[in-house]
Length: 463
Image 1 (cartoon, rainbow, N blue to C red):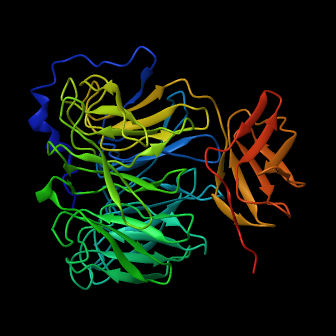
Image 2 (cartoon, rainbow, N blue to C red; image 1 turned 90 degrees about the vertical axis):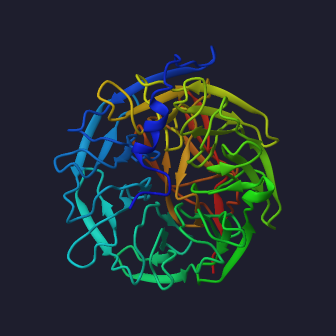
């Protein structure tokens, strides 16, 4: 089961149009870092994640020793290491971005699995590639978990299955770190169907997500659900009136506390949209793609340290091979890069901003053997730090990711100094949230200067 419209073969209808050269703005630097060759993976369709050791981690849907997908690690300079090849019995075709836990453990989902439980799996892996299957779906509790996971304030993991469950339209589930699953909601069509995106937890504590189909107008929905399972449909997309349709990417909460996302179809030209939605459910279409500036945005946006949002389209652009774009919260869009066959094409996955300031992403096909690529894009943004998790109570031990952290002399939480912190590696600090800390930026002082977090660290109340 592929994500809706997210199969590599989809791009075959575009391949004959791939005649234009890739174009990047003079102020941007695009670099192809990895060309997959099948043996080390093929078909990377998801975004990457930064681990505590400074490596970037990702998945491929095909390739590897059994040709059913891999997990890989990569340095920001492009040195790739295949960590494991799925065998089928432990899952296949992982179409999810990995989730990095604060202790370095990575979590994800696959299709397949063992015995009668072939509805997909939830797994964890160490940074070195030791895989543990936490749960195998048996269709009654959902099937086809093609999205990633999120860890909420309560320490539990939350995810979605794109199909099956009580009404065969997909589910939302909670899973403990040890693998006990509870189904929180089974979609019934009218409230959405085929949830293909990961959930996010907003600063207000609610989980937010999208469904690719279903809803009042059969064009998909945006919904919220509490950690205890209280479900609310926040918005129904309506393709017929020029709205977006088919949201299959996660939302992102902006610094302004509004949410931003994409729809694969719909809009003024039916090539997809970028939208903003308030916590109360008021939606604004910020941009409608017209194919010349991109088409079929399948991936989540990421807010860069400059406050702008960055994303990809799986097709369209000058070479009909997909684009990388920047968009402001007011809707001003700039195309930063147009893909071609050599540099990769069909970038189904979104971007991640590494703490070195650069963006990294994957293209599902293209490259010398047409098995896909990993690339970087430098737009001139400087280094920063990131916290894992992005929230915590006073006294909690959190991980701070960064670049060149050796010799750090102080860590502050919204101006309050942490009295206990340890520099474990050039890419990792662990620190205790100090008494008196309030929600705001985390700042690390290094010999090279001060580095601030890309988002506010949310200090949770202590019971």
